[in-house]
Amino acid sequence: MKIIGINGSPRANGNTKSALDAMGKIFAEESIDFEVLHIGHQLSPCSGCFRCAKTHTCTLPDDGLNRFYEQLIQADGLVFGSPVYFASITSGMRCFMDRIGCIDMNNGRQFRFKVGVPVVVARRAGAVNAMDELIHYLNYAQMLIPGSVYWPLAFGNRPGEVWQDEEGIQTLEVLARNMAYVMKVMDAGKAQHPVPELPRKYYTNFIR
Image (cartoon, rainbow, N blue to C red; front, side):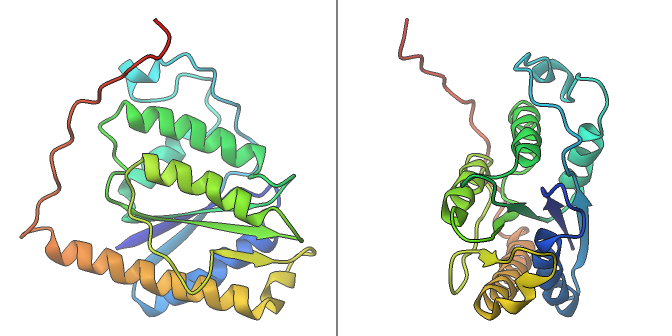
């Protein structure tokens, strides 16, 4: 089994990376491979062209997005991590999720029934708002979202300070353990309980 963590911080080795590392220690104990992808701020925003509906890939100039998407498809679980900027996820994470969400919606929903969790790191406030943004994406992708002993957030300002948030680290560790459990239960039950068929989606426009 494999889990991929997405580091949506412009800082490759900031507190968001530390939060993902805290979960990575638990994944190692659970014998689950863990890899962190640093998307930073290198991605362009979605243009809304919807060409991906035909190509199943993003047709914007290559900035690594399609490679990231292929890696995520191969994983069994996903951790979406972002620091909090102005009570929101980073622009890099938003570009990432907008674009992979659009591709996946038109590519048979490859994230469906993967186990996914949000993780946010804040200096002070806005963490719950950012967490909600991530959950909206995971829910629409029909991913399974386990919980923890608290909301999946931790606090820190300077790199490494998140390790001083004992409750935050415990929350992430329990989240990682619960995530591993759900993945193993899902894997064990696949033969007896096949994934439900994906129905054709209806679109209703309110303005006609």
